[in-house]
Image (tube, rainbow, N blue to C red; front, side, top):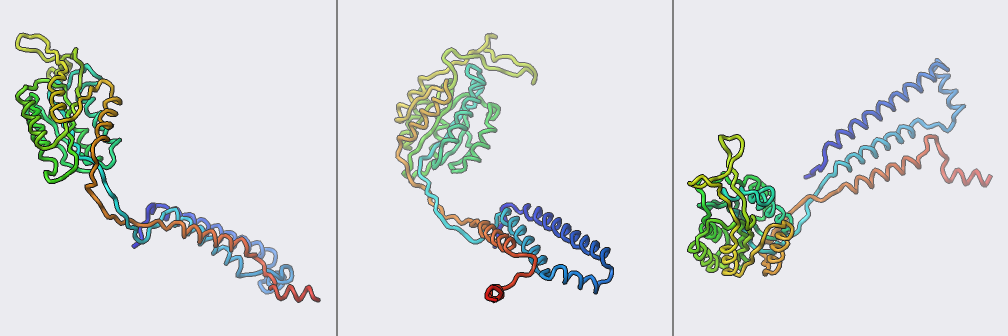
Length: 351
């Protein structure tokens, strides 16, 4: 089976060949017209041409043009990059299993870090994905409950697609049930596997209860999960934006009418990371946060968890280029007039 990588070049080639044929036909017609004007009698015209150009060849000009057409056609076939046959190889993936758990509670809309906490979290995840190679990844969103977004996979493109849809309107019930997120994440990993398991928790640390944190830590520890906590926001905090009738912007208020200030709470996030031998990362500088996460991942044992055999078509354009160049060389070496053979030339020199 033959596969063309860029088939539209064949269309361009047909156009080019058509133009060359039209020019050649016009040239031949113009030559006949000029000769007919000079000598209308065909028999006399042939005699005159034989005397004026005894070495004139009728076949070689046509042969040279055919060689030119073939070489041009082969060049356009080469541009289309035909792929023929198969090429076998193996892909070995070596890395860790990483699940990103993103807090989508309303407090993540606070704008104490630009543009806001939820967008900062998405940026950290996206740029981390750009630096991963052989690791498998999964994704969870959570607020009062946890919801699976993407099971463990090596498809980083799919992960980025799901990441773009993450927002604080995904959960109708609000809160931050981190224990539910950890419980759900524990089902993502292969319980029989030996691959290092990492849960990257991106949150502002608000609304966590100590009992919930202890329960989450126990679940993670029993499952052999390292928790990397990435704290979003600032200790000073900021108000939580709310839309008013779909227009304008106000801020969330408590029952007394006071504007609620959402502050980053590091205490529980640190507890989780320490309890599971993970690490705590402060996210004010995105590049530093990603570097800290990458550094932690690099310290973990990598496991070869996937080996794939693949087949692909092998490029064959070089053969067509070689054939085209050979025909062009023959065309350049071929004279339009008759040439005497080497033996005839030797005999003439001896005489």
